[in-house]
Length: 280
Image 1 (cartoon, helix red, strand yellow):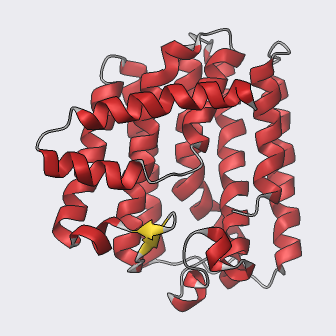
Image 2 (cartoon, helix red, strand yellow; image 1 turned 90 degrees about the horizontal axis):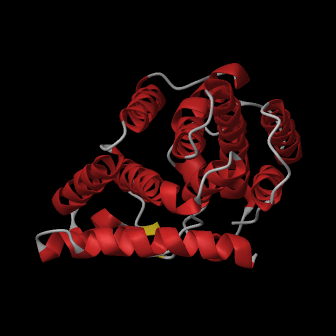
């Protein structure tokens, strides 16, 4: 774990440094409240690991890793406003702490800082822009035309969650100066990990204890949100099996890139296993 913790620490340091430089102080405090409250840092870890797995240096991917975490947190701020969720990561959500207006400004600020970190590389900008289009269209679909079948749910999960995971891996591959085929394989790996992550998230919302999870549970049912549990007749165990299928496909995509055996690639494999069994 020390290997991964050192890399996540690089991202934490970069997040803190960027937030410290934000003006005015009120906005800096709001960004810190959202970003530094905790979180699994899965997406930035994927960025760093993908870079190293393809022969790059972790330092080369830190800005991209911090940027994708800012984008992710910006989307969470908006999600909490839509859902009227008062708790995030065991603390008050942005709108509950600061009000709706400041929360929206916080989301905008996070996106601004993110794109400043991507701006030096055209490929990075394109990668994240494509992910943001998918994410925005996925959010709109959830609100305006909710899925009613498993296939429609899977497409929504791909857009809402898988797209940012894909971007995280592709950013790492870009930082590692990988070939297009490897970038695509790593992107597919991460997208499928993201879908499995979302499916497991839906199961946890339906079955976990809110105190242990660090956020309210039962939200999907209460808000009539189209989780896989709400949309289909699948049991939680069956959903977990579907998530496992996505995990297996993710591992196959990773193998297609034929990466060398390194600690980084081993951690990426472990992640595909972890998202299916996680309890938080």
